[in-house]
Length: 245
Image (cartoon, rainbow, N blue to C red; front, side):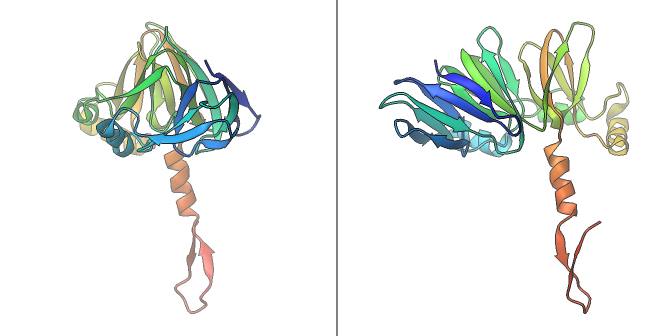
């Protein structure tokens, strides 16, 4: 099996050593550098419909990169799209569910499939969820988080609540539901009001026994903040530029 190592202290790479005949899957655009003995191909992993759903509902690319060691051993460096941490997950005895954009790479015997949830229940009934990716098979998988990644242990009787924008991945044996509020029993309108006034959006409530990986930064909030600081032209006669405050 390919050997995966996280290398670099800040905004790290994934270094992968491959023997002839081995292959890995990675998100489109993740490859930084590789030995000339390796072949890079773009493929629709899981077929056309699966790739289409992954693109438009889960924030992943239509094509995934397949890197194969067809002509000898070689090394490859991969990096995620957003700056932040990486985590290598062992797939086999444990399977995981990945949030939007968390997938970076996996060894060839790991499979990722779309898990469809009931969006109507998530929004109006306080249960269900959106489209996520679920692992199967065995091997190693790399996930990325915007900022730092931290693993939280969930134990029976001690549920945890995490803002959906900070969730990276979680054990598939955990029970979870998406809600508009961290409170319980407020009804849809009450949950909507609490969501707006608290500044929080969709939250995940996890229960059972397992692990949840979270990241320190919210990419949507960061994007909105950057947008608020964009330099725009002055409309006055001075013709200058200014920053939004």
